[in-house]
Length: 219
Image 1 (cartoon, rainbow, N blue to C red):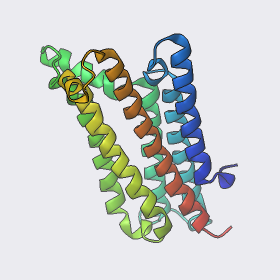
Image 2 (image 1 turned 30 degrees about the horizontal axis):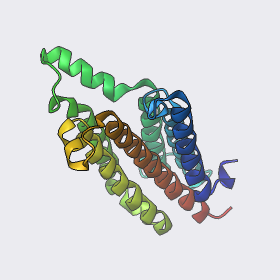
Image 3 (image 1 turned 60 degrees about the vertical axis):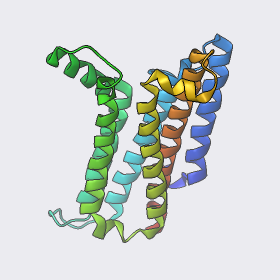
Image 4 (image 1 turned 90 degrees about the horizontal axis):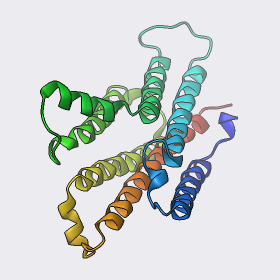
């Protein structure tokens, strides 16, 4: 089944979830209802991340099939990447970085402010930097799959954009610049939808990268 997935399927799933999320929100009279935690978008995000993990593990199984394990084995690269995406999927479902943000506030005994509320955004950015570090360390293996590098670049750019928008949403003053200060709730809802949409598209791009790498292998 994994071998039949194409990039168009990844983006179709993301776009379908976004359309359903907006439709359900309109029906409920709460536009961003399905773009908050435990909504359609959360489960779609976890599914895309889980598929990316499965694709990475699949590539690892195909690389040097039948060879014994060693620390220089290229399968270690794909196993590490796969486990990283599994963690991200669990983070989405269990809201790990959001809960860590709240825990840090409690341990430090500080009130949540627009500034300190950006801690969870920094945690997401840290995830991205760790992922980039792992891929840089494994660049000799990844260079064997040049067809995936463009998609990885697109996913990384979208991830940075998503984190920047998330940080912006923590400060209500951004609404004033949109010229709709009379409808702050609507502005916030639209911002939330934009942020989650970018996140899903980034995840679809990452999945597409691994699909391309899988197709680059014979068989």
